[in-house]
Length: 110
Image (tube, rainbow, N blue to C red):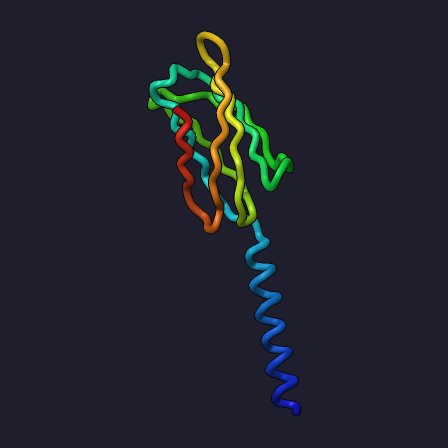
């Protein structure tokens, strides 16, 4: 009986540890590829779930046609609402991405 109780307790502790580990934010570098769009700036809203805006940013587009920033995000599915700024009217796009590990996520926006 004691062995079974210990096993259940150990299993619960492992499950709780995994849950808490996955809830920790991860270091993610988001790279937006806007080459060929003529954009000189980029406004970004990162949305988790249906409508929870978790981050906003205004970025300059580099000569390589990319803009990037580092964020800390928990695992999950996200949408990037993008507004390309430059000559002419702003262009709005939405792209989906998933965070499951630390690293770089490239989001094509052109």
